[in-house]
Length: 333
Image (tube, rainbow, N blue to C red):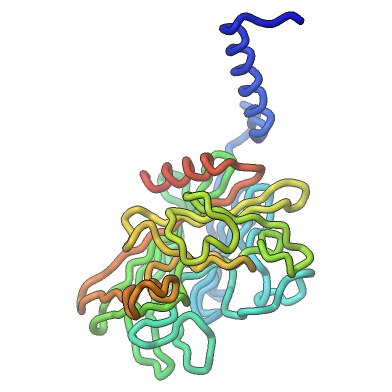
């Protein structure tokens, strides 16, 4: 049988690999195709800020409609919905109707000066947007939404305040949201307690679920360290990624933790039923080797603390190295 010389065989192998990579990549955009543009519109009466990409809805910020600001819907490339509709939209087929406080995308915590801002119980607090959110397209083409919030206990007492900036952009064929929140101890010291109930969170559509109790569930989950499935819960990592076959292709969502954040890489309240939450505070809940209160963090009176997270939405199969490269590019921005 004829065999190529070693040098030519190596070249042939590289050519085959290049062809495989090209086959896995999305088709190139024609040179004369107009670039996809983002737009942002604010409807004060409806208390919504809508971001569109090429005319299609990317996401909608909803403020003072629920117990905290939320992004819903959230749509990835190809206009694929990536988060659960319930309870905002109650009739989407196949969705689990549990944890009504899991509303698409949000940031809050279950113990802030002893007040529960995570659940929606009779004793839970609320995050209320003050004034009018600001919305614009930045010079780099990203949509930017900025809002000021008060974290109020059930009796109306202000526990703390925050400034949240949400930037929506395109990353090649993917979509990327940058969520930056600066919490201010504007009404006295602020203590984030050690509990698993928090903090930067996404509730995925049922197809991305790893738990197969839902008939639609077909997801897989992984982190940067190569852990998968239920092993993600409580583990430390710079990112967690959930993906599944959706609408004839693979759709994925990765949540990124920024290197500047407290206790990076963060611990994760990541559940196999579709909750992905970066939580740097729940150390004792995540590991009984940690003493009670190990994750508690105090912002002194008059000071601030900032956390930054990324939500990466992609279409098509992606190796862990590709997710990590996307995280590194975002983290270095």
